[in-house]
Image 1 (spheres, rainbow, N blue to C red):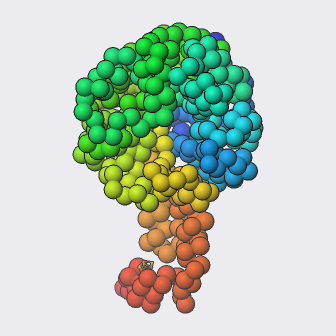
Image 2 (cartoon, protein in one colour; image 1 turned 90 degrees about the vertical axis):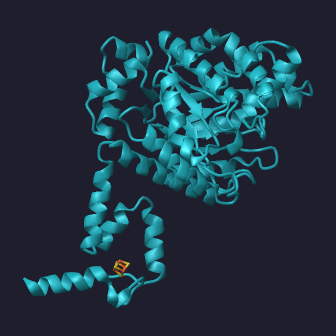
Image 3 (spheres, rainbow, N blue to C red; image 1 turned 135 degrees about the vertical axis):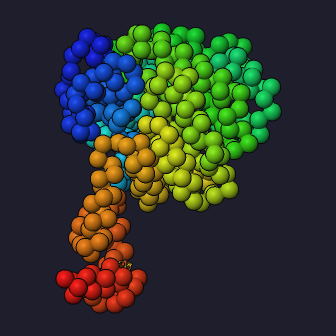
Amino acid sequence: MTIIEKARKGIITDQMRLVAEEENLSPEFIRKGVASGTIAIIRNNKRDIKPLALGEGLRTKVNANIGTSEDIADIKLELEKLEAAVDAKTDAVMDLSTGGDLRSIREQIIKSSPVAVGTVPIYEVSVNKFRSGEGMIRMTPDEIFDTIEAQAEQGVDFMTVHCGVTLSTVERLEQSGRIVDVVSRGGAFLIMWMYYNKKENPLYEYFDRLLEIAHRYDITLSLGDGLRPGGLPDATDRPQVQETIFLGELVKRAREKGVQAIVEGPGHIPINDVAMNVKLEKKLCCNAPFYVLGPLVTDIAAGYDHITAAIGGAIAAAAGADFLCYVTRTEHLSLPDVDAVREGVIAARIAAHAGDIAKGVEGAYEQDLEMSKARHTLDWKKMLSLAIDPKRASELRSAAPPSDDDVCTMCGEYCALKKLGEIRKLKR
Ligand code: SF4
């Protein structure tokens, strides 16, 4: 039985108890959420890691994408990135490798990761076909499903599958007059295949085959948005919305077969449309947990896209998004290095936490209350320990040590908090 099937039978599993404890919620609340599909507890049944819990009422989680490219394929570097992401408290990582020995890289990432690992299996199928000289347009449905099964057997916990890129959504795309076209690699590979073979996307046509594999390993399907907008002018256009409608139907089919599903979303959205996109996904996809990439609220901040994404991520999380994929400062420019990974995770965590305060997530506001109290009493030890990145906060304080330990070098002896505190003591 999968976790969703157990939840429907009224069984509270150890994983549900663990999530309940972590989130400070009742095990029954978690069980009900899993049974209805509004909460996903992600973990391949071959793995023994802390499960990744996403959904209604839970803390917003963050994901860090790592992985090699054709130009930079260094497993040592990827393991350092994994370590940096985990150290910065990411809740999950995705291995998006396309360079080097993909199977071996994935093996090492899964072995080293204490958090859930996701992949996009169509990358491996496409890269292998490309390397064989046949070209990705010649991949067969069997090769796609065999790769998915092999990755599940390896222990991958969740997989992005672009099942909503169908002949009809592609037709709509062609009529849409989009400016940036398709920016999802998985989406683009599948569209190339569909153009060449004049056939339906195998991930959509044989969705039941995908469900059988997911059921066997109890892995979660992350229904990918292959037609996500790649620029503000394309946001919330007809191809994006039509794909979301398809994904909502597939969420229902997954649930019926006892498989957990989450839905992926944009991408690039103007700030005033972010909340509307979250509500649209929740409505069209039966309140499935929503996983957004950013979203980026402007297209002109290259070099600072971790900030652009954190702005969009905070608004998305406040509106109900459950899982934020980080964006690093190197987005649209190059593969991130270790520092960019660390900074990206912290930026996404800030966004997630800001959203959690607005959503009323258990314990989120209380952390800020504690920080305010520590600031008022000039309790520096506590302030540093409560910071989202205590390491960075300590480094900055030590870099400019104050002459008076009570204050900081911003105002020094004119510290408003200290001066008012002294006067108040005298008044008593
Ligand atoms: S010195 Fe200024 S900035 Fe620093 S703690 Fe006091 S009031 Fe705040």
